[in-house]
View (cartoon, one colour):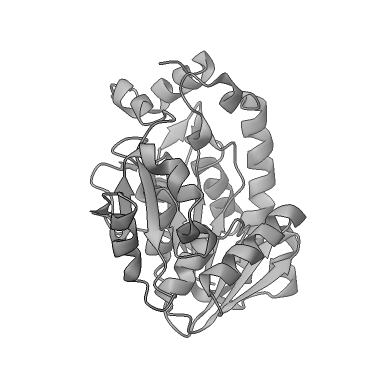
Length: 312
């Protein structure tokens, strides 16, 4: 089992009390396969019998009963199946459900999903809203935008309106418009690092971490400005890097002191960790200990989540 020495050393610095082998064991290519059923499709329950006909034994995940998991040996047969192509299932790690479960979108609300592609979380928001309300899904990268539109159409997510736009501009264009906002920020994507596959970390570096944090700050500012007073915002990444997680939210708390606060998160994962109090000489706002870090183990990918409320 192998990962870049720099990543391993940083991981140990972040989690000095952990025995990390069990975490890195979950960062292998042959880990379990997870997928979510599409309840926006008519007769969606028939998927279970179709899985059985394909010889796939799938079990409900404890986080969410309509997320199933099975052996990774079924990956290719599922990926190439009509179940995926027709939008009846979506292959997705359980960590990706957490931001939406923390956002708690309600039917009839207006929701902003910033940096929304490829659309997995967007479809889950639509599902939780039962297609009642309005979701603005914003994506800046053209190829990812059209992939997202295709997935949303397959998923029957009719309450979603898509926008090919720079996410940094949304707060200025529609200030204080949305009841809830999700920003799954572009990041160094450490969740994609796979043990013994050097090509998976070809572009990972501390330089990329720093560059990602610089991009995330104006996106978070925009997401905050687009959220109504009293509205809620979930900021998340799929990286362990404190520079991209607590560091970015700490910056927002400084920029908008008195107008934003960190809220406690519901306990969705039994062994997730509190946010860091400091990192390499930088002290973070004490409230950031209410944010949460998801460890890459028990099938979960590494993730960071922070729930914010706009107060003024």
